[in-house]
Length: 71
Ligand SMILES: [Zn+2]
Image (cartoon, rainbow, N blue to C red; front, side, top):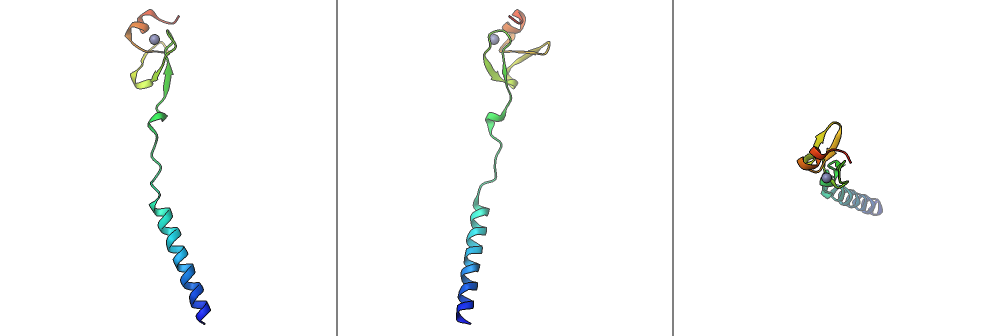
């Protein structure tokens, strides 16, 4: 009987540790690098889509290159 109680306590302790361990893991946060990178059709530089200028289905690094167009 004493052995059984010991095993139950050990199992309970392991269960609690595992449960606590998994709970303390931080939730996976989306990485900022996930933002789409686009390539300037004029000079080929890579930049985040949000900073790019789009024209005619092509991305450009700036207004100047957009005007100059695809090389
Ligand atoms: Zn460019």
